[in-house]
Image (cartoon, rainbow, N blue to C red; front, side, top):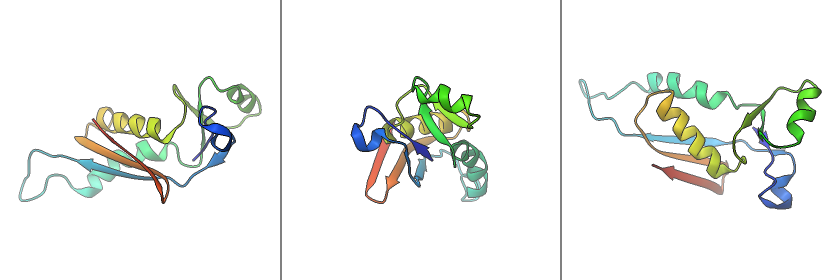
Length: 121
């Protein structure tokens, strides 16, 4: 996903991209025959949420580039916050909890191999 974050200094304020890694931790309360939920069922609920940002540029909805890029026909995504890793982790956590209805308790979002944020509710 590409983005820019004007609040995060010169380097991050320029258009750039990352290959994000997302790790979710869930706490299920029930088991049937030793299984809480099939991993494939979890993937089927979580993957569409994460994939909606794959290969898109993501912008804060108030970024002045939004209008310019849309005028040029670029398909972009916007969110109501600056696109920091911290904000993205919180956003994805809430989407997974509320849209997928899964008992997520922690999300780890990495922009690079050495830059990871962890959000726990």
